[in-house]
Image 1 (cartoon, rainbow, N blue to C red):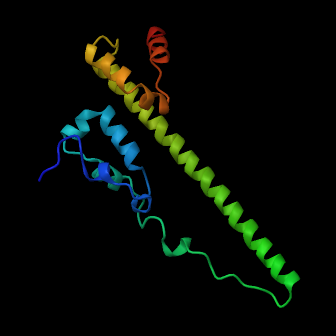
Image 2: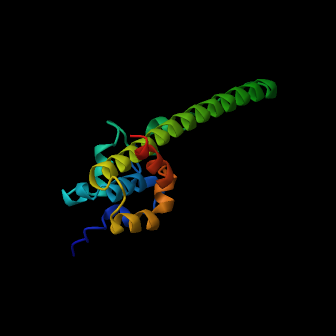
Image 3: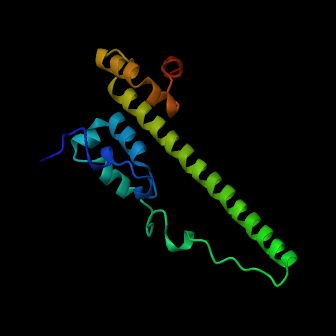
Length: 160
């Protein structure tokens, strides 16, 4: 059975471990929703995610993510020091990775906002289309989540 034009394999995916590194399926769906010409051209969420997957990325659970064996010392003091050092290293690594992930997410949101704005400028710069107005209302939460605001868009257009 073929899938509809608006659905693809990622829509039913609930397993967090199966996500590829790069852009998430949710971001890919948002990109396709804001630029239907991509989907009309044959682009699917799966293809978009794969295109933005980092080379060599195998997803969560790769061998380098597995913790190394914990070494203990001859005395409890040495063991405690070793554990504290290991914990602090893991905590620093986690904070660094969270900052990197947040930076990637921020860049992704900026790209989505630019794509949305560019599409509107090219296709409906004055937001006159009833369809555009309806979509802006229906998807208001999505568009706001990556920074689009109708009032800000109109204000920017009025400055031109």
